[in-house]
Image (cartoon, rainbow, N blue to C red; front, side, top):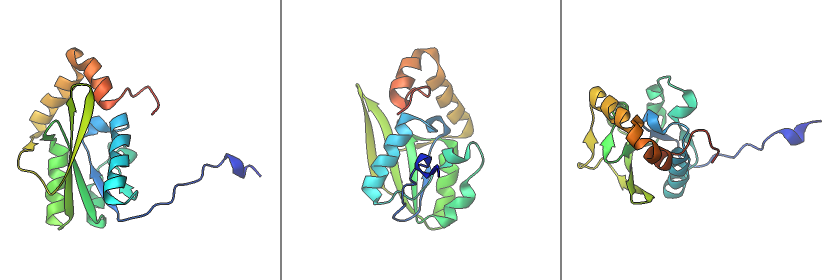
Length: 154
């Protein structure tokens, strides 16, 4: 009777893609833009998105995926992404890297096959330092532009 209130579920297509992203990107405008870009590049909207699971560990889902996409922010893999890359390599997954960076007033997305050597691999301590720098008062305007205001809708 109230079937018209139900949202039509988007039909999934394409290979299963595991998105390894820094927690700082969870539920942001940037995350949504990344998913749209990956759908175009990989021909799939069949994603395992860790932010859908909150802060629970999702690396047990990596073996099920056909494709693994590692997200770098400003040329750096956080320690979580590093750990998941190593697991994807262990399972022989096809790996892509998406580096998200800011240039002037725009966000750049650099999509590459494999894991480029120029991307820096951070330790847990370095990851915390990076997050602290992004959270700092000097970066508050930058954060809203780069990652999106979590209070606003897309």
